Structure formats: C-alpha cells, structure tokens
Figure (cartoon, rainbow, N blue to C red):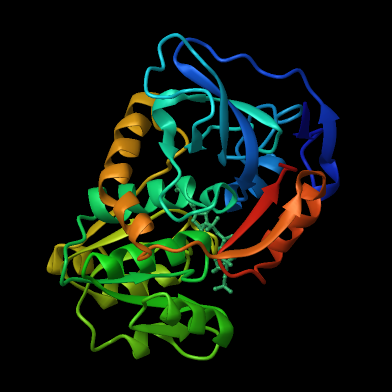
Length: 322
Ligand SMILES: NC(=O)c1ccc[n+]([C@@H]2O[C@H](COP(=O)([O-])OP(=O)(O)OC[C@H]3O[C@@H](n4cnc5c(N)ncnc54)[C@H](OP(=O)(O)O)[C@@H]3O)[C@@H](O)[C@H]2O)c1
C-alpha cells in the first residue's frame, strides 16, 4: 500500500510517499481501507520532531474514514463492508490502517465517508474538554479561541446545538463570518479588536483556549466566578504568569489535556460518549462538515503547508481514490 512517511524531522519536504506492507489487524482491531484522513495541527509538531522520540519512518495522521476490509476475532461490532471513521495514534496518511475496533464509529446519517474523516479528532477533543472536563451546561456561555479551526467550528456547532451561547475569536472577517454562520452569537476578529474589551459584559462560564501566552490573564479576567479555563494548546507560548489571587477570588479552575496520550480504554469510553451525545447532532444536521480543501494523499506536504499558513477555515483532508 501507499503511505506518507516522515523521513526525518523537518519541513514539509521530509514527507515522502512510500510503498509499505499492508498492516494486519490484531484480534481487537479492524483493517480499514482509508477513503480520507484529516489533518491536525499536531501533525506539524510531530513532523518537526517537537514531541521527542523517533519520527523517522512514522506515518502521521490521527483520524480517518473508510471501509472495514478485515475484522479481528475480538472485534464483534464490525463486519467487512461497514463504513466507519476512527481515531488513531498515527498512520492515517495511508491507503490502509489498523484501528482499535472500539475507536471506530459509524458514519453519521447524511455524511459522506470522505467528510466523516473530519470528525474523530475534533469531536473527541471537544467532548472531552468542554463537556466532560469543563462541564459546560445548556444556558451557559462558552468562549472558544481559534474559532475557525477544525476544533473551533466543531465546538461552536455542538455547544450551540446543546443550548449554550457561544462566543469566538478568529483572525479575519471571513473567519468570524464562518463562526457566526455555524452558530456563534458573536465572533471577534482579534487582529482588529481587543477580545477582552469586546466580551467584558458577558458572563462566561467556560473558555477553550489553544493560544496561551497573553490570552491567559485576559481569559481569567473574562471568566465568571467559578468559571473554567481549559487548555488544549499554547500556540502563543506555554510560559505565563498568573495572579493567584485572581484565581482564588473568583474560584476559577484552570486545566488542560492532551488526547493522544490517553489510554486505549479511555478513548473507547470517550468514543461511546461521543456516539451518544454528538452523533445525533451530526445525523440531524446540527453538526455539519466544514471542509476547506481536499488533497490527494501524495500531496500531503502541500496540505500541511496550507494548514501551517492558517488560511483555512475548518478542516483539510487527504483523499484516496475510491
Ligand atoms: N490537546 C489536545 O488534545 C488537542 C487535540 C486536538 C487539537 N488540539 C489543538 O487545538 C488547536 C486547533 O486544532 P486544529 O487542528 O483544529 O487547528 P487548525 O485548524 O490548524 O487551526 C488553528 C487556528 O488557530 C489560530 N491561531 C490563533 N493563534 C495562533 C497562533 N499563535 N499560531 C497559530 N495559529 C493561531 C489560527 O487562526 P487565526 O489566528 O487566523 O484565528 C489557526 O487557523 C490546535 O492548536 C491543536 O494543536 C489539541
């Protein structure tokens, strides 16, 4: 089979299309003929060697969708021919991938297999961080930075559908328009307006932040008493100074998580929760795919360059021939 491999840590030029042996599913796995895989920001960190460990030879890609073509003896839910999407630790930039059967979900009604490749990483991350950890409730207000990212647009749609007021920040008027089209009550273009001033009269219970840096103090000032600031990245920088009295005075909660290092059992439980709570929204059209551009597998380097440019709104996919 063909797969994109990282040949050494570096820029997009280190991604090479290679011939690899087709993997065999273990008892608890299924083998999927990949129709499409989704790009994620951490694919760039992996390629650049930011997370340590050996990256030479690794096939990137955290999510995929396609057709089950072989089933392990201990994977009773799936049959050959089933169409699924799945979360994986690596290996989605390929024609075939083996996946823990518990990390697969059916393609939601009304979604194409290709579009469903955009679902696993975003829905698992949003459900884990915003609903399970930060405990967002209907009627509460949530603010998401990076509103036009794959994560941001998923949060906006899911939280809006479940009865929250959603605020967002994004880096252009077009990006803000998209956030509002998909359900944000208001999106602030942070390049033209100070988001703290813009949202100072809101009562915000939850903030999902991927920026860090000087957003931290602003986020803490914006949160309502008892509010929860949840981190999933720190793109502007991880070293920040916080006022502990501000934390105490308002009884704020600051926490963060990374999905990839979670155990297989944790991800299986999360998959079940996502299927229960988010899949009905996907099937009803309240959560819609936002696909900015697709690339053939062989053009993974160009696809990643587009992601790094941050020109996109929503998701970028690699697509294999049917
Ligand atoms: N912890 C976890 O488990 C987990 C899981 C999945 C994703 N994530 C993180 O969640 C974020 C969204 O993921 P994604 O794949 O959906 O991202 P994405 O589509 O690549 O979008 C990220 C967006 O963030 C905005 N941004 C704001 N400040 C930035 C900065 N200083 N540098 C670069 N971009 C900046 C950019 O848009 P504008 O600046 O134009 O608004 C950019 O389009 C990423 O940071 C990713 O690493 C974390």
